[in-house]
Image: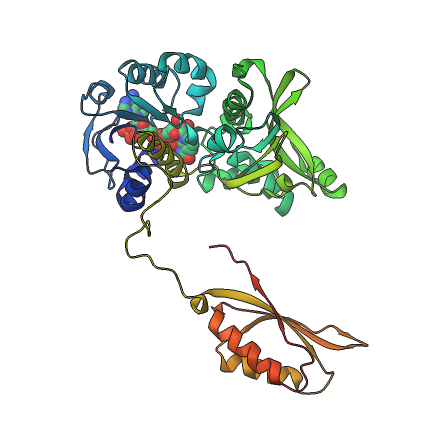
Length: 420
Ligand SMILES: NC(=O)c1ccc[n+]([C@@H]2O[C@H](COP(=O)([O-])OP(=O)(O)OC[C@H]3O[C@@H](n4cnc5c(N)ncnc54)[C@H](OP(=O)(O)O)[C@@H]3O)[C@@H](O)[C@H]2O)c1
């Protein structure tokens, strides 16, 4: 597949980079190589380390290149991008875009021009989370009863800092700007408009609703003060900017606004810049999606998933991959697995027990991370967690511990999940 990329900024340059670094898996999954042939930018003098292909400053040169079958639009904006998208489809080329603002206004118009030509837009909602494919394919058998999403990382970062760290709104916003999570002019994000664009795209897949941003309820987070945070804390809520699409009878509600969310709901625990989306289907019930909603690499991951899907339709079936997708990859031996572990030892209430346990663990190169020693009338217990160690060593330590006289039952071991 030969592609042209229009826009090589945050997302476009990550697409170029990942197409190089992950070339092997991408080609295996797509069934062919995905080759960026030409790109368009505004400023040809900027240095772009990941771009090894030809660059031009006129989008029409890319659009008119007869050797390209797919255009990736990553320039942003609405009207200019819409022209690019129309020209792409009218030339019979596939279109992949991350442009939620354009799609919020023109998704139905573009679909009409496209007919059967594929348009990929996974990256337009929630960055790296494959929510479009989940709604369109994975949940295809369901009537969608509700979508409830935290779709704007900037707002979620600000609200999380207000809630967890007692920051006033202005301080949390300034921190978001300092870390690059918010624009110098943040009004588009904090006003709820970005989340609304994404909600409209989701609603068109779930419900086939062609609403425009001006016709739905959109409220931002700018009026939230410490009072609301205190209320949320007192009554067991978190405070989130929610984008909600809900089927009510034969109508669909679409709204974006801050909301108190009971702490018992999973979505209330989506914190920081992360995005989370709960989708309720009439057959499947509630499903939940979580991940990075923005950032070059996460968004590029979604862009490339669209390219792979388009390529795959003309080529490789998914089933029956080569034995190892990445060359040289083999299965790790069970004993080499590394994890942190929890151990429970039921022991006699005697002096020196803990010292012997620690000595055995240390002889296997295992160090203790935390320790609890609840005692009861039935005897004593040692509950401990370890730092990272090998499966082989923990098993050997358990065998040794089981032979000790003061250990009453075989030790219980549970692995502790660490994030990658
Ligand atoms: N950034 C994210 O995390 C994220 C997440 C989800 C979706 N998106 C969407 O992805 C798209 C791209 O975002 P981005 O953050 O990568 O934007 P960006 O960093 O501002 O990059 C835009 C790129 O487009 C080029 N460009 C703009 N107008 C052009 C024109 N008229 N002709 C040729 N090139 C032009 C720019 O050229 P120069 O480099 O020469 O200025 C730049 O390379 C947007 O639609 C955005 O909403 C972004």
